[in-house]
Length: 243
Image 1 (cartoon, rainbow, N blue to C red):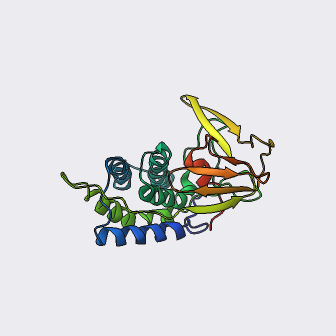
Image 2: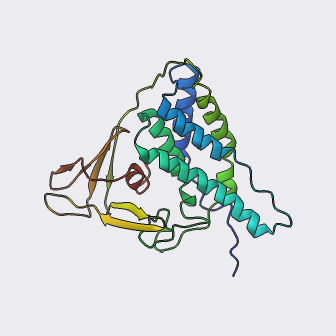
């Protein structure tokens, strides 16, 4: 049975994205952010996804067109997460990439979910094991502003420009639940491990997550603090409740 894509319900979260977008624009206007090489690589890669046109097809049915639209948003998300998890960008760039990833979270598994059962499952509808249909139009509405912002950021990477990275405030959050660390030992093969406290063995928290946008630590209720938990940034950020 064909599924009708819902383009109005469950709008993507834009609170963090709006905050980081405004901050980035203010920094650019004040000349306080000039991309370092690692930031430039990430911004250029995401910008290429933001500006990628939809494929040209003859006689395209509506469902195929909808899939193409969602696939473009999914590719933006996956490229963003890839550079976020690489751990090479500055804290300012990490904060912006994380906000973009959170806003595009409905497309983590839509239209093409990871093939292995152990792969990350973000954006599950509460009380179910299913993903909601992504809000396509709401997601596409983010693209013009993001394209303008990432274009402006990329323009700071001119030859001879001196990199200038603004500071970013650290943050702390609580998470009552499990964290899962995912690896890909081979194409289309995923492995997952639940993170446990090395002192008490606890896995359900509530964890106290402290992050300076460069490194995250997990605090267990028993008092132990883990800095070598192995989690990628997205494995923490994308499962935290929004604040």
